[in-house]
Image 1 (cartoon, one colour):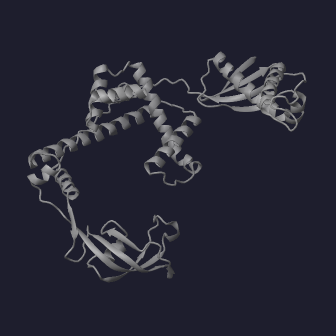
Image 2 (tube, helix red, strand yellow):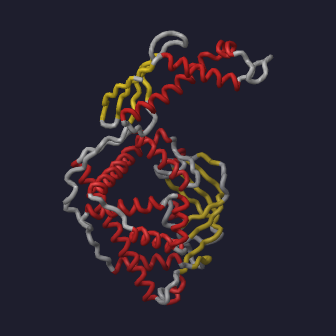
Image 3 (spheres, helix red, strand yellow):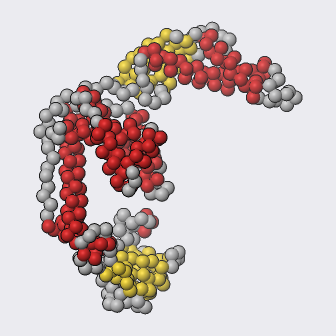
Length: 414
């Protein structure tokens, strides 16, 4: 086998491979013998069909299979020989091969994608630090109000509906752009203040049993594309009005959230808000640091890696949305690709710097992270550790910590 390598770009290598025609003849005979075992023709027992008959009928398809096998094997061997590590199957170009039994060599070009070597410069002293945000009383009060809302009791309203109430109603008539539409869903429930403003206004100040007519315009981002921007008219009967009764901010409320008293609940809220602010500030600094590095360093990513990442992200979104129907992957690829490329560049930069600076996660740090995960699920750390070992994912924990330590290193938290 003769192999010539040429660089097409930072992420592409062109291999020109030349093989003796005898290799194809040998591969063809091997595939022919295999086909004879599996092909059964009328009048012959399994495996007893004459080879020449199979050759005559299936020569073209067997030759194609032999070529595919030969190309795969030779490309694998050529990459090993030339110390090339493809990140995806290659794209064959300019293929030429003799017919079976004819003289001549096999010659073809194949383009494979690789992860290019990188060298990150000017990363050590970026001057980027985490901004410290002071927690305000207003933010604490807002969080406590949120807890009151979560603990609210829902009751039938004795007063006309207002913002925040839930209104249940039955359709009597639906018009869109003046044309009556069939009622496919008999009733609905709406939280006032969270829907189309004109509908919320029309359902405000109503009581059960009241008949209401509401005219409005469907927003341009409405879920049903056929209704976007069109005028609508709903004639409905109000079935019920539900209101939320907020509990007082007392020790009793704190007990509902597992705290001893209101002081402990407030302390927990402050702790959580502070931790969230710290995490947000740190992540913002990380992003600035990576952006600064990428501005100074040209990092290229193979297209196949970008496509694979987008495909993974697509499947993940589908799972998160319970298998919801998304636009075709092909239509989302150009939209999601830029962000996917940035994520992959970020990963390469972090990995390179971690190697260069010998940044690692210690056993104690891994143990602490496992204990943290165990605490989130309220189980013993050893259970988590054993599960991570069984699934082979304990290395992921170590790599996650290594990446975090590298990002902190970049913003001066060393």
